[in-house]
Image 1 (cartoon, rainbow, N blue to C red):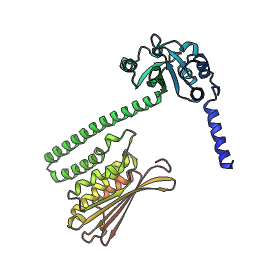
Image 2: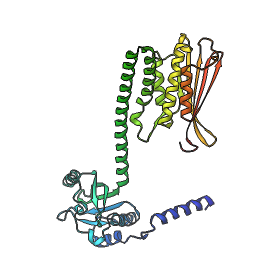
Image 3: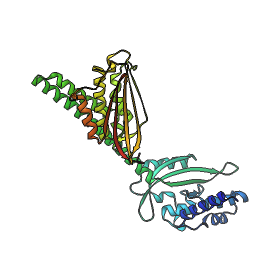
Image 4: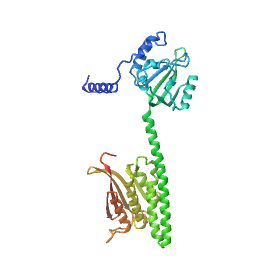
Length: 372
């Protein structure tokens, strides 16, 4: 045997010992059942297979006898006893309904009855009770077993504790419900803000300024709208947000190219990136690449490690537009908003006024290295 094989065998042995640390390796129940049913429907080989399989499996398994009144359990393996907390003599001779309790849903119970009556196979999930009164969610598979003459001899039942799975499902559903509610409320909030800005603009005679503010509010709303329904973990996918913001500026689909993978980032990063990209897009529409028929914008985003932190890097590159030059003196309001929003997110903004168009790089932290 090779060293690798010995190592694998050793690892498997250790795993098996850890898994069964509270249970003996040998389960006498299958052998006892076979001894009590000498005239049963097992050949020698199949009987040995039954004994070993039932003794070794970690799946809770029982057999019930349809020929006896009330279809009692006639065999239960060690895993069944460990799952339910009952001893062998407390199980044998009883119908499996003894595991039901006051909060067991009668609908899966009815499915079990129908399956037995029709000699059918069914799988249900139902709440069962252990001997100590504690509950567990049981994924129960039940089906008929026939002999070689086609005569029904047993009903086979396997049980699996899926309590953790059910709890995880419930948590996921709750998170989805909360995300939908948050999405609804935030959409309403953006609508209210937009209405207030419009009314204020008209009252003070500053409709143009109000319109610019509203465009920024709507851009922020789009950043969230495309992703909030999936924001069950408190993070959202930056790729969806970027596309939601920018696709509105390229109705024909010929002047904007976006590429990048999906990365889950905090809400605050989406706010910063969303408003910054809106300002870049608005500038490209008024003064940059999108003022020309052949102008184009490429947007690329990725995550990289810098100084032990994960950084989201968004690169905006314009081509085909008019000549651009670094503005003299104080930056315009759009540039100030970009710098302020990225700085608010703990990031940095770099601009390059290239011959072919503006290149802007936004870099923001999204967490510790290795946390993605």
